[in-house]
Length: 217
Image (cartoon, rainbow, N blue to C red; front, side, top):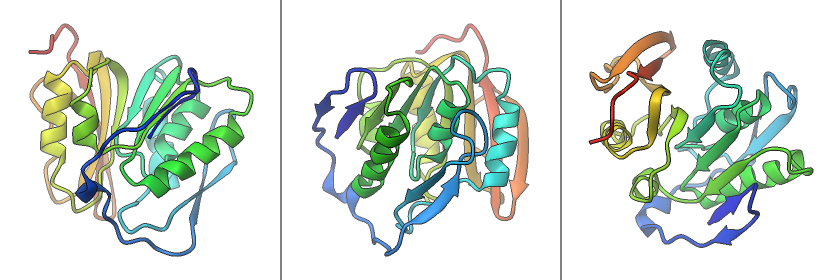
């Protein structure tokens, strides 16, 4: 499923069926938007075990880090889950957010929120129901900020980071935010400069910037 906030068109994408196999929970869970035009709004998302949203306190820290670079930025929320990171970015002035989420129920929940909150079509966004690998196999477009928050027990980060770095997805000087188990060193390449990091329980969260002038191979 493809949904665009600007073109308002649909496109069906084929995804490997194994990428969409999840156990599903019952009642939805809720989060709130911390800042910007949607500040205080609450979002509901499916209680699927694979969806582990970034807590409010961590998101607040992250968006404080990004305060100077977020307005007008093009953002990619590659493991969107609840949609909280991309929605927060739109609320705080991002020029565009592409949400990528493989779970159809979760992507439909994000779409419903965007349709409700952005009823006047003031924000530019794209929603893609796909796994990260399939999305990154498509035609690349450079992003200024990329959010990487895969399922906690996933081993996909090194492969995804390699595809982002070599595939033309990162603008010069792009910021990349990633979450991973605090016990494991983040798999950041030498072409990324470490900017900030913190820890929340078992989760480490990190912000990198891509050195300017590096061209995709």
